[in-house]
Image 1 (tube, rainbow, N blue to C red):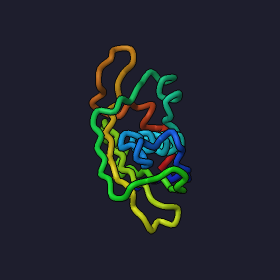
Image 2 (spheres, rainbow, N blue to C red; image 1 turned 90 degrees about the vertical axis):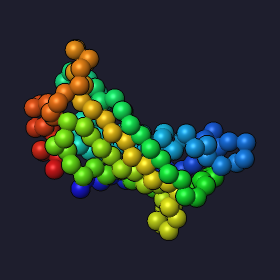
Image 3 (cartoon, rainbow, N blue to C red; image 1 turned 135 degrees about the horizontal axis):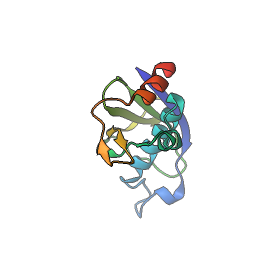
Image 4 (cartoon, one colour; image 1 turned 30 degrees about the vertical axis):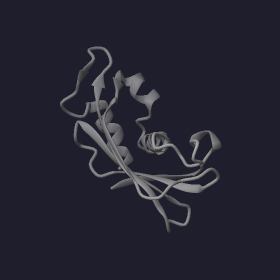
Amino acid sequence: MIEASISHSVQFHDTDAMGIVWHGNYYKYFEIVRCHLKRKLGIDVQDLVALGYAMPVVTSSAKYFNPLKYGDEITLYASVKDLSYPSLEINYRVTSRDNKILFAEGATKQFYMSIETRTACFSVPATIEAILRKAQ
């Protein structure tokens, strides 16, 4: 399993009228750590575009356990089990810095897509597969 984590502080603009993080902002947190994970793998957005591919999110989910508030210090985690599928499935966790409180979990699925033809790839493109092998 390949993982990445990053520390983050909850910003005031992420909170709602009740003073807690609006539920949709968890997807922003997932994206922050997903970008970190993909950079670690060598397939960040700019890398993919240069190779002629995109990776749109096709499914996403989130489950909330405890509310986040402005100023909370958190750790964002992302993990991927298998890089050999034509889709990239990533699991997420949002915890307190000390990992004692679980705030949320989630998942996304992305497909490789040719930018030129705007069609899904039914296998991992060879150029990307070579990059992923190096990262493992």
